[in-house]
Image (cartoon, rainbow, N blue to C red):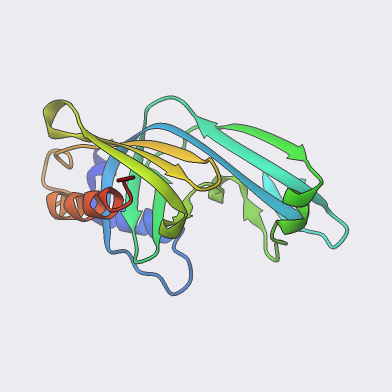
Length: 186
């Protein structure tokens, strides 16, 4: 557990999900309270927990959720909010073949995507609303609602663990709070 509160480990973990050309502005250890995401991909097949490109493949909607508290790294770049589990946890997946307008607008995949990668990187421009509320012991709860009805309930603790492994926690937490607070509905 102590490895969780290590800034170098955190930056490496978050770095796995960075879009090309992006760099981390801030990252902290937080608590995922509830996460529900949904993404649609076309021309793909599901094989052993991976979506693979297939020209005549299906259009799949991947719903990924977790309603139990879990340790998560929360990071921001200039254009993205990124989440990465601190430890491997189980998620609830619901995978459905779909058709219609949502299917025709879905992106084609060109590379393998693991189910683990889905629901880790969110464009800041897709944040429809973020409610920030101060709670116990100086922590903040953030309810992030995205334009596609995905949502993230996150807790940003006041401290980054014991032992000094997260020396920039307070500074980075303030940067993340400022970014998310700027997305609040007025």
